[in-house]
Image (cartoon, rainbow, N blue to C red; front, side):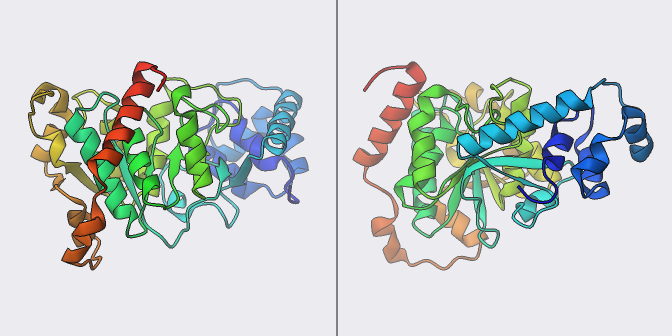
Length: 328
């Protein structure tokens, strides 16, 4: 803990504040003692607006102490907006998290990440394409960031990790509350790869449906470009797409998210079809990512670029088994 002590955690859990309010308070105070002595009315004057929520500062400080204690016991790190290790891309957000909690190692700020998200119930073609693209870019040292959800997220993580690069997952829960629980081994693989599990929620925070849309803004902000592999008309992936456009990120859709196949219908792809109709570029292969990122590659690399179907098939089977809660 630095000279700010619990100040940053306290600010991050004050109820009734907007993200920008919290960042303003992070800049306003340098010492915990200067904040905890203030009343809610004092803080309202600093922010220039009222706060509907009520709080007891002693209780909030006690909660911050418990969070810090859990972090120490469970090897969870945290970094605030005011500190140098805070991911610089998150500083550019309109509504940045004041504090992020993480296990593992934060992404190298000088290396671009490729965001990949999509439906939890993908077609076999989309699941396979997600794996293949994530694997192929990983062979060139590009790490994928996704949400550790079932389906496209899991296949993207699995493909990328199989290429031997660090993986990154942004959670809608505390980093000690893996959701879904069937992806715990996948989360362990991400940590073993040298990557990280990242969340703005303190440890012990259980997954809640309203956490995930907020989580998506962090996922897209960490990405240089975002691929929506396959998504229905109402999908969390489309929320991520909206954040990506708002944040000035490249937004692409995968070709499998636009095509009808034997085991899938266009109805399950209306979200990706809509994005393409509105101008999102289509990614057919990892070569398209390399072209758009100005990465040189040799045609000879195609020999090793895509893993065998046996490897991809095993990962697809594992992902589907997790979704169906089948023991392999």
